[in-house]
Length: 222
Ligand SMILES: *[C@@H]1O[C@H](CO)[C@@H](O)[C@H](O)[C@H]1NC(C)=O
Ligand SMILES: *[C@@H]1O[C@H](CO)[C@@H](O)[C@H](O)[C@H]1NC(C)=O
Image (cartoon, rainbow, N blue to C red):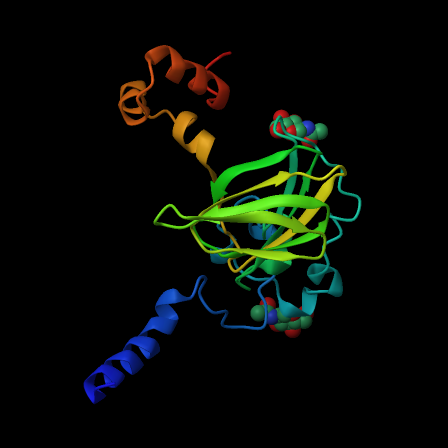
């Protein structure tokens, strides 16, 4: 490698690290938000003042909400509990969060992406067709089994379908305290984008777009 190239790569590497970091680095051990200032009401908790550390207890670092998780399944057979600082304030400023997702037999987690995080999904139990699509529209997908872990790189569309004959449970962790989730069907058909644009984009008739909008837009009555 020519020396100039090596210097360029080194500089690029050094400069690149902070640019590619997801959330800002914490400047203290932890910052459990002070409930007095509205912690838990907004995901923008990183701007909330921290509790005095002498008021912080072990319980601030334990989340029990997954233990007796009452799965509330969606129409597609998915029940998800997203655990970010809104539910688990102790995560605040630590650059991580997680999700528990349960899938009924045949259930799906529709194509979606997390704008601010890579996800590591550990399939606790079940058989799941799992995958993502990269920015050249190449799909990386296969059936994974209990105990296997799959990666969904940050910002890429991914999906899951329970292809086993028992319920499936996935534990996903994110390298952001607020990964964000955009579900493709609702983002496209449920956000209020003008029908005319959607008709042109998908080559569908006004009636067909109307059907999709009624399905995915909570504001249109069924
Ligand atoms: C934190 O709490 C301790 C013990 O109650 C107290 O001495 C200290 O002044 C408090 N610090 C702040 C910044 O309020
Ligand atoms: C279950 O989820 C639906 C939305 O998918 C929501 O409208 C409903 O209130 C939830 N039910 C319970 C008991 O949480």
